[in-house]
Image (cartoon, rainbow, N blue to C red):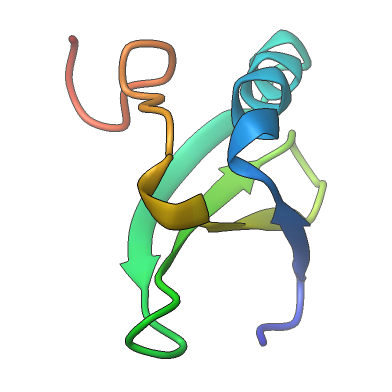
Length: 81
């Protein structure tokens, strides 16, 4: 775990609401990547900046058996959708 990063476990069903609150508050999603703590339990990690001077947040989300909503149209990380 990195200093200056707050790790927050989230559910797939809460991602949309969390992203809306982040964007409404002036935050930005920085990146997302897949992580495999064990081969049978993949998770996706989202690095988010909540605002100037605030610590980064790492949202950690289990894939809930394959269910994971796409956030690309709401918060594209690179380029336009």
